[in-house]
Length: 152
Image (cartoon, rainbow, N blue to C red; front, side, top):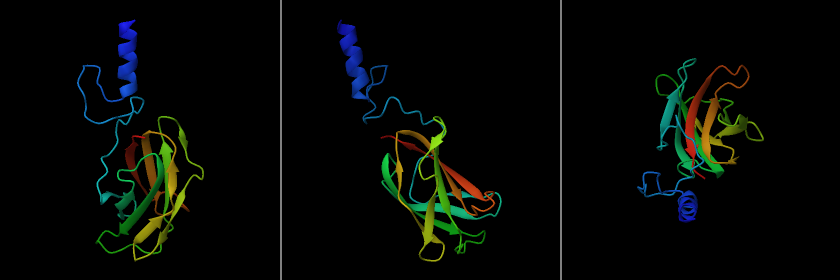
């Protein structure tokens, strides 16, 4: 009976490792985030199609997590100038579960040249999320992909 109690306590604590060590921070033991990038302000990806670079200088919360998320995205051309007039959209997708969100994509509204305020989206569960940033949603070919872990 003692081992059942111990197993229950370890499973509920969320941060005691099977080897008995303590990671120091609560984590969700059901969260698989293999392949996730570490979010840092200004993280960027460059499109193989157009050479446009998409950066995320601001994300609330930081790092992106379960609940309401709000991003500011900047886009620059290959010589570093602001890319203006884009119909930018972000589509969150949870690859391990095979689902996204409703609505499927969230638009960015341009403020300062090349700076897009992305409509708030709500991540529904912890785990690995892919965020496809579409720079031209009409043909769907010009995209970059970010992969972040929502801890919950």
